[in-house]
Image (cartoon, rainbow, N blue to C red):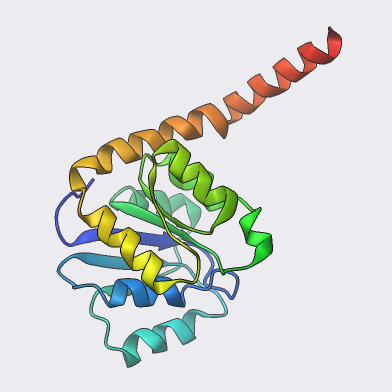
Length: 187
């Protein structure tokens, strides 16, 4: 964990309409650049629009890094202080757990979860980061300010994320659940 300032927030994934990253970008862009730096990895149909938005508003703490293959992105994400997961404010997404949730938790990093519903509940219950309302610049900014105010807790949040992943999302934990279910059926 960097634990220094500016804090390193990273997003890696699709830059599409479903991710609705404009609220996240505006929340970070309106924080002091000395507090947080946001690195965005990925491609998608919204990439050019997002880049133009950042340029038009002269945000100095948001950087588009392009696409990296899965074999290389791990080496970048482990350098972050917090990993961002964001989806638009849609009813369907409130019952969705993005796969990025599991992969981010596995990396031993705290999360900024702005999806709503079940995904936010997972992060809250695991004490694995901070949560915000999706598509809400003010809620995301409030969550980031909360995160930045507690750097001594970042390592614990990351450890909590990893522990939750191991107990609930890992292949081993899922095989154990299947074994228990099969034992119940046999009984």
